[in-house]
Image (cartoon, rainbow, N blue to C red; front, side, top):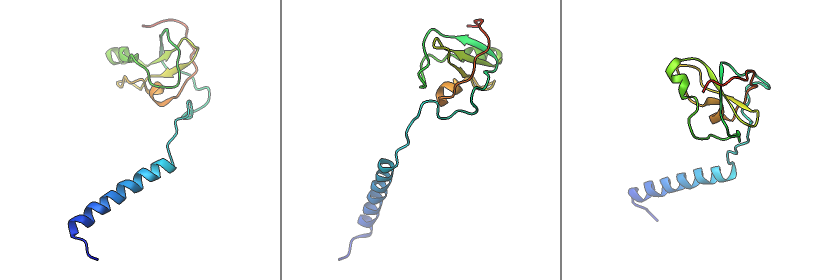
Length: 113
């Protein structure tokens, strides 16, 4: 039995997609809160930005590291549940630690926001 060349290409692509989906189903990537720690109990760098909500090991809105974009000084976010996450290194102003699930040990107790 012979198939036209166009049909073989379509069947091949369908098999490839099915194979990739099967692989992802059998070996899923699982998020584990706090599993991407650089070093345990690493000190936070820079000035704190205090927020009135708890950190739950997941990205959250609003974007709290924005003040770092303006003045270029390093900061970290201090949450209401005594956890903290590091902002990206200046001139970057992303919530790096929050996005990666990485916490740090806060030191200061004075607000910057």
